[in-house]
Length: 426
Ligand code: CTP
Image (cartoon, rainbow, N blue to C red; front, top):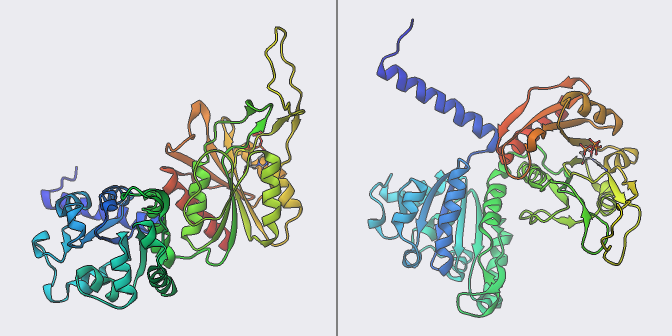
């Protein structure tokens, strides 16, 4: 038997972690995010953003301005990111790689610089080339992608001087995650609230992964979520799909450069930066897809489309009765088959949720719907719904491939898109 001493074990652990990191990098494009936090009440929300980024495997370093430090402490940011917190005040951090060129080192280190929240002041400074503290010098020295998530009073947001500055930054190719409307910290109602943290997270991922564009310039239609086939004003026929997988597929295609259009059923909110058409029934979904189809390069159909709809819709609520209710149902249109009949150059990628005979059933759908590939997942015993981890088996005309996962739907979608890109390449 071979025994390893302590150093050999440590070396093996290091090699394994390097292998895992490089594997993750291949799928997920693990990023170095430099997070700038400026002085606004929304600064406390940056803590949740760091959590999301770190949990997804990204490396985060924070740069806190003096004004920002009045709203959140360097210790909070350092603890959550696991890195020293940088800032104008040297007491914030003990480790400085090279104090003379700290702003350049940090700017070079980052794959993306995100300023969350971004005040009118920092936006005005950078738009006009002013660099008078660590964050503004990093922002001028950075050659990587930059993202801004502004938050401020509504009058400041709509001031022409501020609008001009924001347009200047957009013109430099910077990404903006715009604020939303609501009651602001000052008590006024209007636009200026920091965007939702999950939208800012999506924006950072999309901005930072623009380097790896295997679907650059391709237009991809994604269907997601359940459809609803209404019986009367209060009752509906639907299924247990939530739309999580479809939304992750839409984001994964977007993250590798595709110009994605989402057709979405169900209640989930549409992802940041992806034009979304919300639909209710299978008929609505088909109509939305047919409108977009001629301009698309392909479709990724993750939607769980209801196969049956009530023959008649009752405009009044159906009253309960003693005898059994007889409900005639009609077939809904098959969206993929319809798109296949009108396809020119486009590819079709289907999904199949199966509770038994996965490969046989999915292969039959591949042929019947004229698909290039289909990804099948096991939904026996309620598996695979919502945001729980899942596994996919890819199937093409050549047979089934190695299963992908089990992984979170975010990682699974990223791997599935990579698998499909390789398949199209062959
Ligand atoms: N699909 C579609 N239109 C429908 C039903 C399904 O475009 N009316 C698509 C789905 O989006 C998915 C694929 O077809 O990409 C397979 O869907 P699935 O529900 O697994 O299969 P069905 O064809 O509905 O067959 P069954 O429900 O009998 O398994």
